[in-house]
Image 1 (cartoon, rainbow, N blue to C red):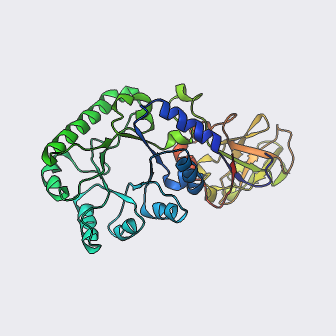
Image 2 (cartoon, rainbow, N blue to C red):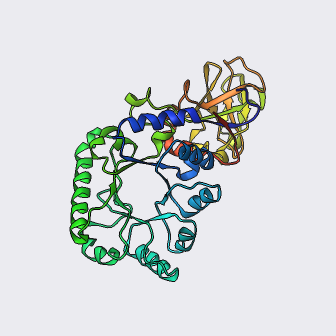
Length: 365
């Protein structure tokens, strides 16, 4: 499609392709949780969640409560896990039938208190265990105390998160996490005298350790087209494209500067194009000063000078172009978000999840 302004294209057929591929790596009875936090990794959480619901995923996951509330208001009906609830969230969580992840005794106490206030003796929730990532979660040593507190209202699932499942050089670390999770599960089941449902695998876990899929798997970045390994490049297709246009072209003389703080000074007569996108849109300052490159036709153009809040400039001296021409930051075939982000020593996750909501979204079915 031809664009007239900075645009994020969301290709739903690629989303379906990625879901189908990831599901092909697991058993048909294993449930699938789709992670739609951070505005569905910079796309549009409402559009993506509705599509995933229609495609039959079993669960959605968000980072924070308000993300889940927004999806409920949009009409999403399937279960939604809130991965990182805060102490004042439980009234909203219960009101909107969200499932909290309980990861500490402090948060558990607020959850129990909220249930008492609502005169509820049971409510669906999940328990997060720390098996080595050391961010959130209970430890194995907490099981005695934890089991006493949760006996009246058992969790729907217990889960943990792998820290390096994409890196096969760290296979021993991942296997240690898996072993710890299995040990925690057995110990908790013994204390509660009942089997528990569980999930552990993230995208790279699905691809590299599928034998530990348990009752459910989770995928975030894989659904959006990235598998952290070049061997999955042909199977996973990027859902997002980020494109803009040339607003204006300037011919400048040798010695002239471009942008704030004279971030670029031309060594020879040059042609500079200005694009209507900047660090407020998610293209950070780290891409400036010739680190970042964009695709113009079939040629690469370097970002010159410091990236501004709403604009950036590229050097098109050797490229035939005109005002209004399309410029690609990344897409699903010719220039990936992985390639663009690597040039500034960052990752596709950070790049796509930082895309501003002020940018126009176009859904391509």
